[in-house]
Image (cartoon, rainbow over all chains, first blue to last red; front, side):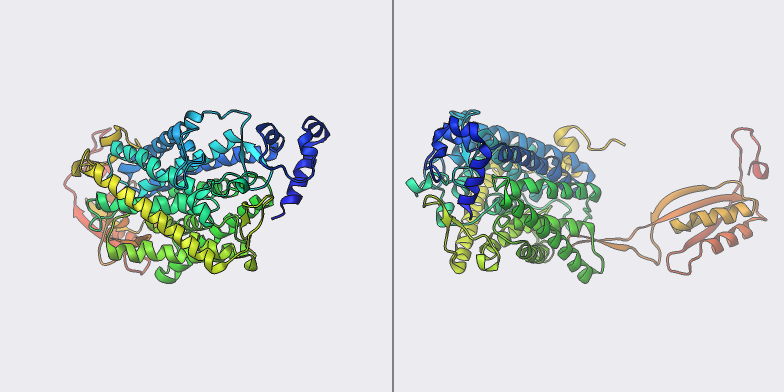
Length: 472
Length: 112
């Protein structure tokens, strides 16, 4: 990390007038624990712009990208239900986020969960700032809240694909509210919360549990994908298979929609991954190119496997590969090098292909849209792969030690890092899988989780929403 | 009068139509249909979920013509729709009892 160079550049860009107005910046070296006024001078329009654009890009990933990607894969009679589920989940999650989610995730408290000091965004204003990954570089707190909000929006929306075409709407939304509160907000806190590069050295324990372990998760392999993927698997096991699964054909109703969705996911994911750098700089560009090439490699690999196995490369296969590649590069985006990203992309498609074809068919669970096979498995491959590709010996970025001020590059221990990554994966699987099982079972035996056989036959669109996706 | 029903490969429709027009056939009814014969179906694979569709898309052409023209109509369809591969389709010939042109009330051969 070139902290000092970066700081010099930032300070230089501020211009003479600001320096005279804020004499604190004129002193030598970075400022420890700056005040809000000093932070104002440490934020710049380039970073702010990038974060606002990234937030909008990540929203694009859930609506319409994920909604169309999923919607195209179900039968015509359930298309609208998928669109409505995703739209509603995004809206509900956004409201929860500003009510208490942001506070639970991104304030200090315990290593497990934050506090409620910023409930209803108390104390947040246009002149408060959030830390980045560089000493003395800040972005407006509202921009940070919006960016992180879009992650809370898409993660629960990912889950619905596992039990598509048979879940009741209201219990689903209740599940989402509880799951965000008990699983997502604490997970985001454990993985991403730390006091900030200018503050951590004063209180090195002021960080989330997994952050403290040294687990590397650039943009949310554990928090987003493994988290949602295992919840989806548990959900589809509790709800049960679709009636007619394996006995009647259930081909996707529109792979055109799925293609549009997958492509928009790819575009939006640049905000997800490169935006997670929190600054518009060379590392954001690194995350960008890694996201680009890992995805391309995974799409090619999946199509190749199909060409070899079935003699025909399918569009759905290439699109699934692309999504698997995006999932895998998510935790590694800012740590890998472009060439190791390509390897990660190739590897993830092999694992995901094996799970969605062989393992799913063998075990017989009906993960309708392969949330587990693509997101959880892809997330695990990515999370553990991050331990390898971050290795500076192979062109990786290593990790930065913020417990000293100013921050320095940490000593990279390959074996130790991979073990830490595995521990982070296991914790996510246990927490999200366990809580999801309790929530799903609780809903199943109280208000019911599954639509009746009659509703399922008729389609959720008419029965649950009183509309059809298509009126020809 | 005869009703000639031909089940053909969809991409052969234009050739069949041209061959029949050359014989002086004035009209036909065309329907998109699905079915199977010796060709069986195709296999579709979506992420490892295999669906064997045993219904293959075909085109059904229906032509009513004078009885003496019928053998030449059958021959023209048989030749124009032929690819030599499995799944080329079938031709059925039925007797027609009566034909009426709705606009004028003309009947039988006059109505064709």
